[in-house]
Amino acid sequence: MKEQTGKANKSHWTRVFSPENVAHRTIEPGSHYKTLPGWFPSSKSVRGQLRTREPLMRDFLFHLDTDPAVTAIAEFPERVSLVQVDSRGRERSYEHVPDLAALTSSGAVFVFDIIPFYVQQELRWLPARNAILKEHYAGKQAHYHVLDERTIHLRPLFDNLVDMWKQKPVAGQHPAIDLIARQILARPLPLRIGDLMRCATPNAMFGQWEGDAEATMIGEVNPVYTAVMQLAMAGKVEVDLGRRFSQFTLVCFPGQTEVIRTRPQRAA
Image (cartoon, rainbow, N blue to C red; front, side):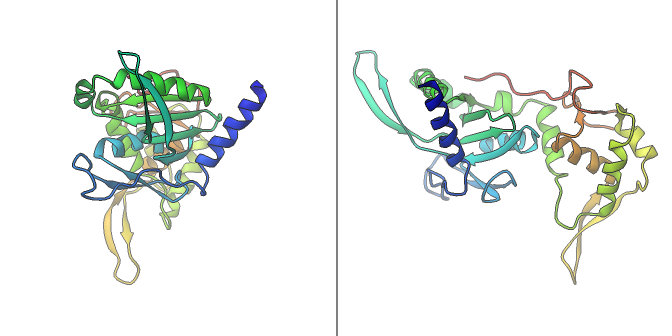
């Protein structure tokens, strides 16, 4: 029986993260007074982008999209039917669509709702609902969490992740970045980013251009810094996220140091 349940759960989550699944909640501008919808580009989504209903949900995606352990992300992944018993013993049936689901390389599944802290304080029924959802998803062999700005916006972690995300590989990026990435992996790590900048070749700021015939420079890129960030997002190196990125940031091979990736721990 346990084996059958395990197979059914695996099949369920395979479908959730497949191209066949669709978002189970429609978020359009002006559709709800509490929403401020947007889009978040991500190669970890089967459609290449994720719909967000508010900025805090978007900000949490910086955590998921830069985490090398996360292999797939789905927004509004499913609609679940729940039964809640009130203080008078009366049953109330309702449906819930969580904000996000994430699949990791180990096969673990995490389901999230993103709710600002002040909103949680106003919803007296929320702890009871959270307990029901935790139990429901435990039966689906998944982990359910409610997150808010206290964990999502932890600094300097959040600032580092946003900066890292901006260095994601793009089509037509400068070939020096891939060359330097190979040089970094050949070095006797751990080394600081500044050390890598001094010994890497080539190492010079260059322009990042957009367009063809009438190309426009959209920014400058340090190839060593960009290569380090891309290697970290790929899980090939680790960097200390607990301190603001600088030339003194330590770059290690995975498992070389304990204090490397700081993760949000508080969950309602």
